[in-house]
Image 1: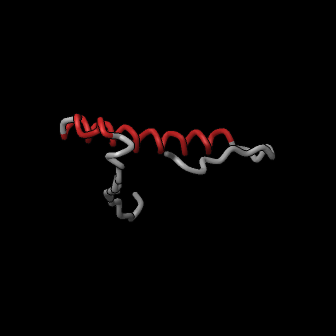
Image 2 (image 1 turned 90 degrees about the horizontal axis):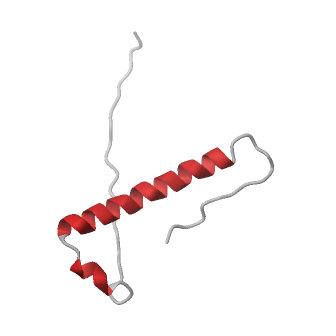
Length: 69
């Protein structure tokens, strides 16, 4: 058995949403808003994972996630 320490940490995202651009966001309940934002964060990580899979093996053709808006 290896002598090691395993510790999980929490990542906190701050979401800044323009109420002028997205006025309907205020119609969501607190639970709905949290679920929506959590889904957005999960999708962002899935994009990064997909990027790694597509570019695996160094084929010379690369796709990079530049921004998530």
